[in-house]
View 1 (cartoon, rainbow, N blue to C red):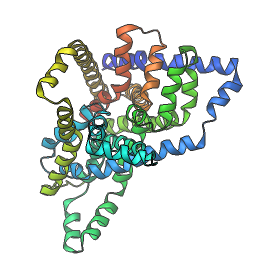
View 2: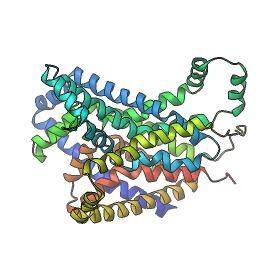
View 3: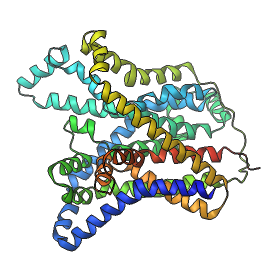
View 4: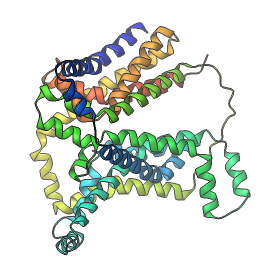
Length: 414
């Protein structure tokens, strides 16, 4: 158990602690050399903060609405069989849905020609608005699985008899919807918040759509300055980083405490109902919008299956490199999951404290803007391929630690 904890803490220290210490050093040096410059970077425009928070919250609301059907099937009987379908959009790049649906407004298409005509008529905002709407919608489709899992956890804790009692009261669609939202208001709020926090660090689709957010500003500052000036991007991202630190610290600690608590709760057994077919259809619809239709749109844009096959020939080296890195990352994250499960199962307070700190740091790194994590690793002592792997581990270590906590919590108290 001590060895497992040492492996977990060591990986987190190298991939997260070492780059974080380098960032702290750069900020301390900057404060000592030019306090005025640091203060100027900290004075983030209020409009940028509001726009970033509003955009992230809007994506969270839309993703939660899309995830309702998926959450119902996950929380119902046989939900495990739906897990691959629900999770599929998150296994793809978050910009894929945006790029695919954007093919419909490409030059030469009906929508593209219409938007071009509207822009020529003096409404130049129309193509820009269409791009931003696609970015928000694409990110909502990508984040829907996150909301579905959070909602499903809350739904699974409710006894089936409560819904049956409400059904006997009658009422129309609005009454049933109001009851459902009221009964699961806590889960809904958590789902919106979870997606919003993740979206605060999202950059690629919003950058492509020219949607100015704090993550885009940080990305631009990294590109416009040398490594010695990257501290400016960190200082200017204090809002996103502050939210990531607060959420990561609280949730990471609670996750480990919940997994280590083996006392019987005495909660009544909850019976899970078979979800209605409409919820399964809704889950399949979200899958189609986020995976099936985008794939079809890319094939349509390519013009033929032969051109699709050319991609695997032209980009074979990149695909092999990506596959190798992904397999190595999976092995490392899987090791972290096993180490976390072993350490938490030991029931030792000192080991749990080490795991809790590792979980908090990993979750903070996972929620922080990805461009900043990559820059921090690039500024550390790591270089070349080890730096690439370390950056990926820093981003996804929380997945392994979370799975390890889930595995430990699943063991019976005896």
